[in-house]
Image (cartoon, rainbow, N blue to C red; front, side, top):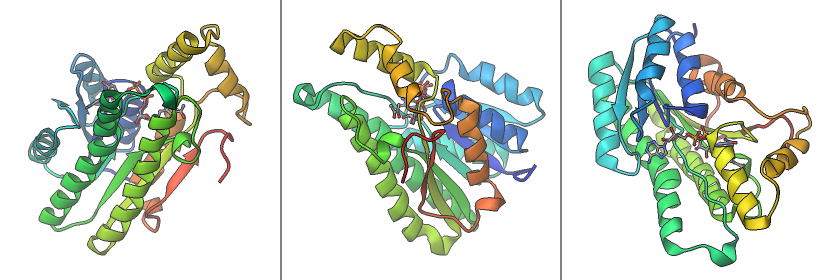
Length: 259
Ligand SMILES: NC(=O)C1=CN([C@@H]2O[C@H](COP(=O)(O)OP(=O)(O)OC[C@H]3O[C@@H](n4cnc5c(N)ncnc54)[C@H](O)[C@@H]3O)[C@@H](O)[C@H]2O)C=CC1
Ligand SMILES: CC(=O)C(C)=O
């Protein structure tokens, strides 16, 4: 219960990794603001959190819109009576060879994966400062933020960008007692990978499931990652045991990319 009584906001919390992070931080003792552009699943996740004894609120917001991120953080502070941790987890994938990438798809993925993280950092840090205490900012990068993957070039660029923002923010906010770190998962069995696999199949003729299995085949620990594997690392980043760590983008991938 290392974050007992803290308030954490998690974006992209309706499913997948974000849902697992929200549930884990609740189990660690935090009250949770769940944010997602898709409201359908948020209420179910909120109910799961209440079942473990934490408070939860659901906020439908699009992280590409800074004013919506601001409103979500304000609502979390007001309704949960505090604000201590933000997990900028929302993200989208995009699979296309660089030769075929179109301007509108680049704009969209930059808006979600890079601007969404930037607004989360900016709004959360301002809130911590206004409240007169430090805080934890935790951002979603990826193995693709340490190594560019074919067909995932623009996605990889966004995840490298998250590492850049994480390092700069760590330096800018350290004096305020705010730490900023990122988590870099590998191959996690979520809807995102279903979409990636289907897109590889459509583009290359690979059978459905083959691309996922190929990536999983490279993992030293011999299995695909679960959202809970990622959430366990985020739990560490959210808690006091990581207080002396900032500006890092740690790989949590079962042994796939080595840095
Ligand atoms: N699944 C994987 O293997 C890996 C995922 N990641 C990263 O982890 C994060 C979570 O990924 P998954 O859970 O797998 O994805 P997912 O696709 O299963 O879930 C993403 C969630 O984010 C929400 N979202 C998307 N755009 C949004 C926006 N503009 N505003 C608010 N919410 C929005 C979606 O509605 C969805 O609920 C992403 O940033 C992803 O890039 C990193 C490495 C590996
Ligand atoms: C989804 C992701 O982050 C990959 C393929 O590294």
